[in-house]
Length: 225
Ligand code: NI
Ligand code: MN
Image (cartoon, rainbow, N blue to C red; front, side):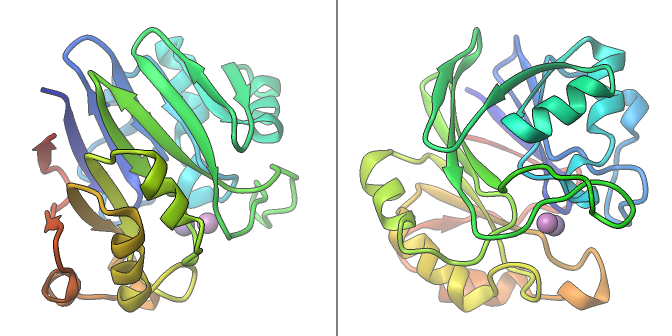
């Protein structure tokens, strides 16, 4: 049974026991992070967009592990120029890797790397990741969008992560609507309480969701799916 571990903010690791994936590996400087970037073992590093709280330690982790960065074309090329192995993709495209399949979805948000977010990293994306026959949806940072209904219709999602922190992403009420659209088997709220600006109550979210199991993970906690 594959396992997902929440490392704080939007950072999630996935493993099937053989392959190790890390998504949005923001550990250094992340007040919620329980792990250190130097301790991460990864075969693949998936990055949703160019903002610092998502690229995080991704390039360093990829280089140290000789892992492959999976990201949109523009961000993958930036990581490649910084010395990482990369597999560029783009929205709507999927690819079968040794561990399973990754498909890129739209996300409504920004992109841009560096201290002033000025280096172009293309549009933000979400990931549909299939591992051991189970599908995980990591939307990155996004507002609510109606195409989540289509994503839910066309994919049997076993585990979805959704931002609830408001200000930069969906708030709780929009995330509840996203659950209605996506109809995942389980949902984990994330991208909240990292800083005062994105404070939110995962219990309030859980109380409002109907028909899907809400799993509240503290940084460092895991769920099998
Ligand atoms: Ni962002
Ligand atoms: Mn973010």
